Image 1 (tube, helix red, strand yellow):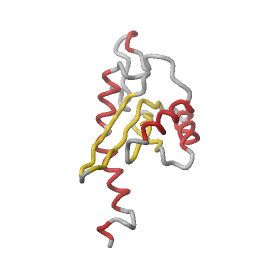
Image 2: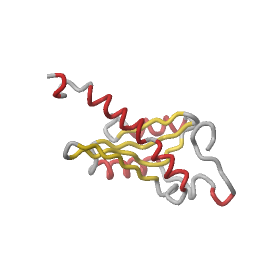
Image 3: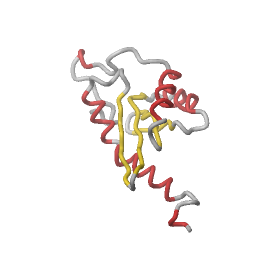
Image 4: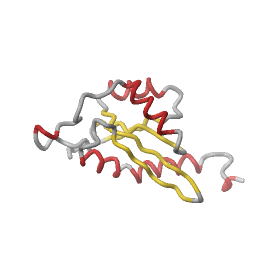
Length: 133
């Protein structure tokens, strides 16, 4: 890994990404499609030592994604949660460009705790949360 969390190339055959990146509108379409089955879904955008999320529920996810990429970010996959029966499940899915790269898959798994913490922070602040009533 680099000091920023984006996996380094080990050999020329393992370049990031494995194929040409899709357009940002295509990534947003994939985000919106996968979001239908999740309580919360986002694109993970890695930029050195920071990972930011573009949520399906953002006002303008395409503009946000374009801005993060313009600042040097790399969208590597989708993360999300499913809430059912009192449990919260974390889901991650690398974009097709990264699906054959084990480092990308592993990196998305490292986002589990920060993403779930972010989710809990926002749920706890919701006015209709039973703990507030």
